[in-house]
Image (cartoon, rainbow, N blue to C red; front, side, top):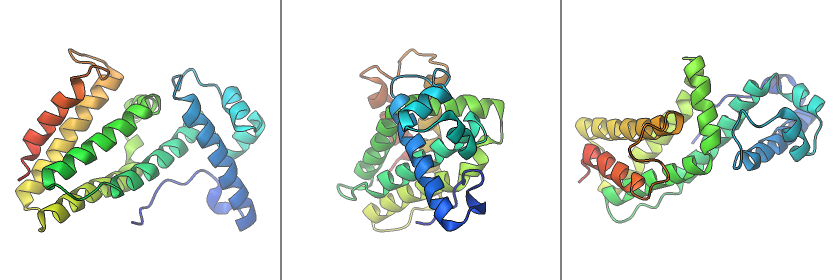
Length: 210
């Protein structure tokens, strides 16, 4: 599926060989950041530490990215790209509800593996209401993949009310997780053994899949 995604600053204006080198440099910073964010928050991660882990200099970082915030956008683009592939790989077997269960679980596990990155994105969006606009196409594409998998399991298109139920279930599912990541209101925490099963039950109840 072809989805328009944000492109890092300056990438469109480079000649092809330099563009390839620029992409390779960006990839090194992305992989380094993903590894480092497994153990520390975005606020704790310094550009100097990131550059060291990527085997590049701080100067190279700022040649490639205008700021740490600019780099966050690149990280999120990579995150969503991989999320697309993850949902594309969900198996279509066992009925519509089983397919949706697998999709929910895959999305939750990926989010938990990149919790610090997602926390940074939520904080950034709180300061900039338009932050998510550039990611709307890829987020819609993920929703389209999930709906398409369910339709394949059903052997028919979703009725308008079914599609609405599915969209609402996704909205509630994601909102509860986001609220826990940014505010941790409880009573259940993301790490609690019964958090995910309870949330999945809520989402399935709203989706009302046959």
